[in-house]
Image (cartoon, rainbow, N blue to C red; front, side, top):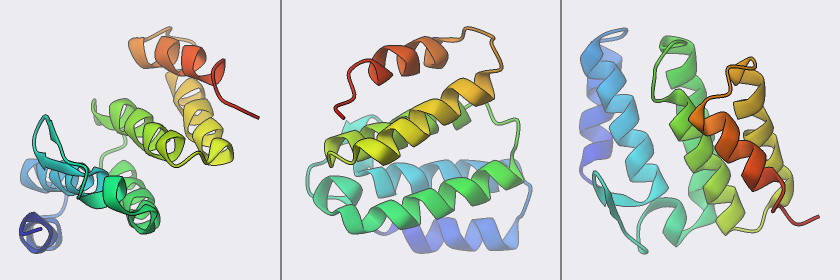
Length: 124
């Protein structure tokens, strides 16, 4: 995964920049298992191993702290919830879906609707 070292350097050397925001987003996509943007792979990131989930969560928390108003944050929350769904970790799935709802603040956004619908399907 070549992108990891490059993105880490951009995040470290250019904090709070647009380049660092994009690097964080690329890093999270890599951790989620994307080979290229929009290209999912079964042998990469969390698709290959649940061991990447803690790193994905910590990367997201750093991103969220650095870019609290990032428009992509809700989408990444949903993708993280889906990653836990795929691993049948219902507690963490619910946690991330509920976070989407709390961050939405009643705006009734696309991700709010998606999270509400997905919560109805979570196994207990």
